[in-house]
Image 1 (cartoon, rainbow, N blue to C red):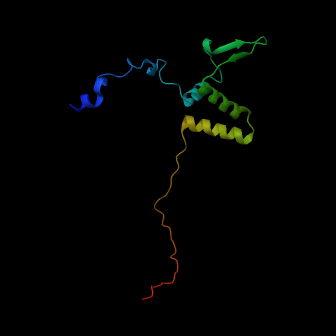
Image 2 (cartoon, rainbow, N blue to C red; image 1 turned 90 degrees about the horizontal axis):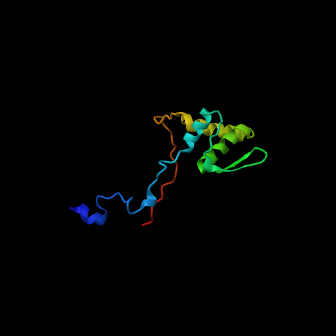
Image 3 (cartoon, rainbow, N blue to C red; image 1 turned 90 degrees about the vertical axis):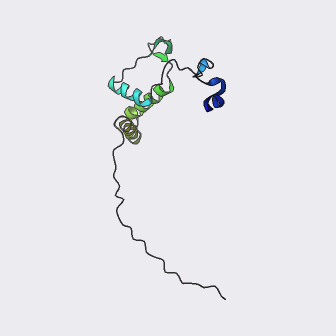
Length: 127
């Protein structure tokens, strides 16, 4: 009884027939983690769909349009390979944490902590 009152004309409707722009026909976007796994498994080989090729230059190089997740993945790989010491190590650490997960750390919460009491004079209100 309450459904009809709350939803009105939208009852038994998923809304896509009224809002076709909300339909994601390509499916869920690929995550950076999945891009990173794919790139490491393919040993750095990159496959670009024809619609993402902007131009093929005279010297043989190719200009392409990359989605943001791909661009972030390739920038992270570039830091890992070509970065200086700290950048390279941090990029490798980020990649390993994304693929294997962060290492477990244990914290002992049963340890007693001694807190000394402050020695403060007792003051009384004057009567």
